Image 1 (cartoon, rainbow, N blue to C red):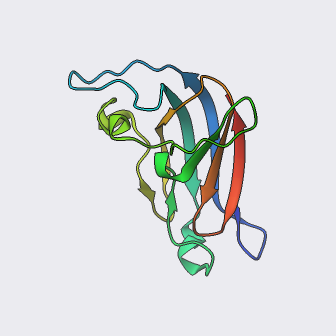
Image 2: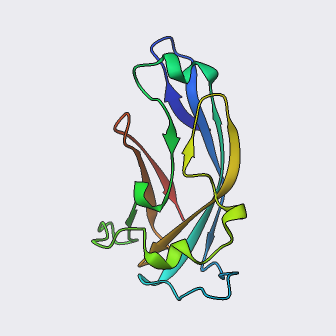
Length: 137
């Protein structure tokens, strides 16, 4: 489990990457191939505290393809973002993690990335706190 803590040490947001799948097959009939090479799906669970609104640190939680950067197995950060138009139309919205998660909510879903390499490291950066977490895939 990872997360963002308030000044009192209590988690304002906690999240877990339950699984990472590489070369995910799209389920939508109008889906396109990955633009960068490989679809990578992160199955994520998130829980936010009702006290999040009382914090000066974070008002909502967001995790999407725009908040990730990919690093190849050679240690080189990709110039291509982990987001693409193809990620928007690959999977049904019902399986995706909500883009914005407010106070006192629980959510679970897929964050779909479009990356160059079938293995490497994914870096998630939270814009509210400038915190970052790494996940090998």
